[in-house]
Amino acid sequence: MFTLETEESLLTETIPSASDRSTKNLVLCHGYGAGLGFFYKNLFSLSQAPGWQVFAIDWLGMGRSSRPKWTIERKSNQTWDDIVDDVEEHFVETLEEWRKKVGIEKMTLMGHSLGGYFSVCYSLKYPQHVEKLILVSPVGVPENPEKGASQPTNKPPQEILEEEAAQLNDSLQAETIAAQSKSQPTTSPTSTRTPPVISERTRSILRYLWDSNITPMSIVRLGGPLGATLVHKYTFARFPSLNTEEKTNLYDYLYHITTSKGSGEYALAGTLAFSAYARNPLIHRLGGLQMPTTFVYGTEDWMDYRAAEKASKLMKVPVKIIRISSGGHHMYIDNPEEFNREMAKEMIDG
Image 1: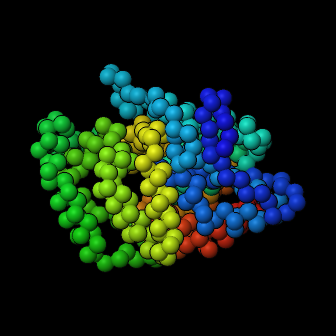
Image 2: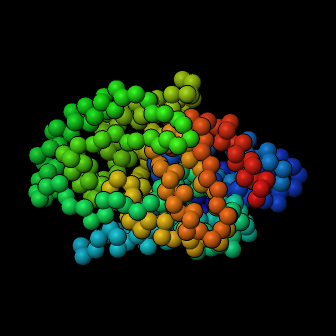
Image 3: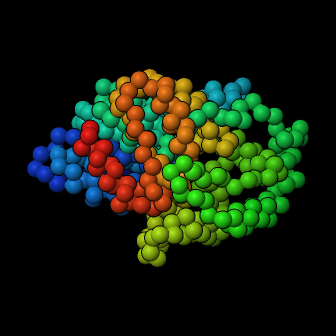
């Protein structure tokens, strides 16, 4: 645990090098709703690379780091787009302060999902401290295809919520059943997982909740026993390859970091629009990176690797795109052996 200048603390897991002397540093940054504990299948393996020291951090206000009050709020005369820079700056400067405290001069920075998004932001501002950037299924790369799209109804969002809230549970259940009844997606190298179709009614409700910054964590906290059940069902359904003990341990971990005081989670609406597209897409900024960059996706990932292919054409640095077989968005848990092998190669090549 490292204490920052603000007296808040950032949880850090440090795995020393297997050799006597460490000359390289790998820093792992988790995604939204997760924590450094999600890398439990990777930390030991990655630390075996000779000369490498491995760090995993919990972003401030997430995981098991301290939970300061979230103070970046949208004013009445602002849109969410107006505060994107403030949200990004918050996490970039927190990471930079941590780097200074630890005493790392240069690092290979690896970020997953939203952690990948903030890792790009950091690398653009402090390129002198990042030797290589590894983006694991990063959120926010493509442009939003719905940008400027009209709402499906002219009714105020609050009225929509009041009219449809009673039907939300049935609607979501029906869509889940429909999605599960479909055949499993192919895992061929050219395939990409198609997300389930969501009705306009449900989209209206979810869009309202999103723009109101009502996070999944706040729903779990308010749900009491139902919240625990939701996290349990998610964990056991999302990670079928894990044995029962691992699923139970991961559920316990995820439930406790989810129900902790709300803090960094409120960055969600300030960085991503509804449907998880960035308000300020990275594809317009990746061309400014100054270090070799590797994208990593799972073959069954809901995040589309083709966005990285498009972005690579705009980048001026060496770019590599890796796809982990039988892996979803958390491919480092789904197929840790292949993921760890590929990361070891990246560390050696770095």
